[in-house]
Length: 151
Image (cartoon, rainbow, N blue to C red; front, top):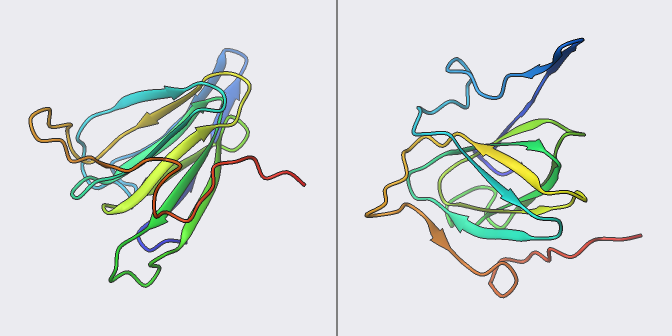
């Protein structure tokens, strides 16, 4: 596991009315403060990535569909420098993925329907000076291929 990354297995509590699932609590070890809550989606087969933040911690949970969420540690002083983590998260595997600053991350919708991610980052989005740094998902120095791995 990449240093600083944390995973929380989310518990779904169903009853005859529906279901409830807590995602992030203030007393969770991974809670580094509250910036905002937002959702983003991807259509089947779409890759959104790569990007990283310099200050912000992300806390991502897939609440509809399934996503392949991939992290890459490009931090030169990290003991896990060069490591890749791949998580399959969503309805069939409810997880909260805590992503520290300077760790590249991206995701691909692997379900047959649009997938929805809820993110609770530690910082508010700064429209004037965004803490977001991007590289291309397919043509970059990150040693990862988004293709389906069959076999």
